[in-house]
Image (cartoon, rainbow over all chains, first blue to last red):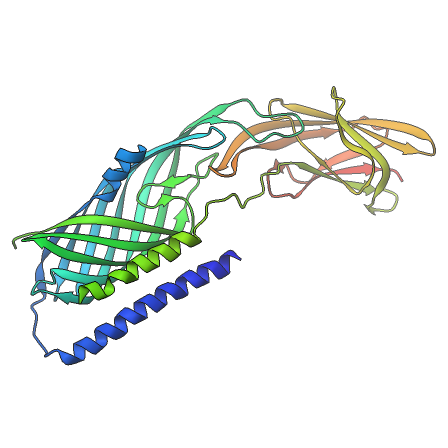
Length: 226
Length: 155
């Protein structure tokens, strides 16, 4: 059942991408051929969603990204971030983690306007990596014939994780060099190393350890005057 | 032109989010699986009229049942777990005590599934009344539901 659900999600993404590509291709035919220089500038992005989430839930972070505009067509991107997570389950298990992550990838413009692609609709693929530690408190086992286990803790469990993200998003110029953007992501872990006695419930930069996992991010961008 | 595409990510997010769920899909049952092996027939067999309870407890795990396998919980707060096995044959009651020595370790599966206690079986002894011997075939007791112990009897 889960494999068919995953297939449906992949088909949905493919459908959305193909719609955008087909429209973009038709528009290109109408345009004249313009020779655009390779380097079109750098944009620095600031994650707005994670700090906001931190204010609301106590689990948040911060991230900064940079992408290079190549011919208004390709946008290699790098992102560095920090995320923390603090959650107590319904059964009282307390999970905390805090760690850094980075992402590398490339976005492709599907449609844009402006000489420097100030307004942009794009799709891309990113790889993420995080190495982090986490702690668990108030671990009590499920009840069996002999009862529950006494509460225990696991401190400084270590893990590494790698994942991919399929991204589709928009970026819109709001004022001079400032732009606002948001995107939706389809994340899936490629590798997660477990702790000695546990599976990490949360991966910095990825989110809760589900596979696959949808996500959404909001960014404020600043175009460097270069 | 940009506005044309604004609805696509929204639609994608809505549909993807609606499909996501974080329930517990792993087995959280951690038991020692003991098969009953006849030395005379040289095969695993079913035994009739078996009752099992934990030593020192009056709560029955099995009550006069016909079984080919025993599924037993280990005490998560002790290093040894004992079960009394009783069979009724020709109107006579026979009792054996199964002593399992083990070391325990918590295992956190997920926020939804919670915590389990996995164990490593060190020894498994019987008193010899019903079962002549016990062999540990898999020392790791976890949620994989694999055979751990073979209980041998002379019938």
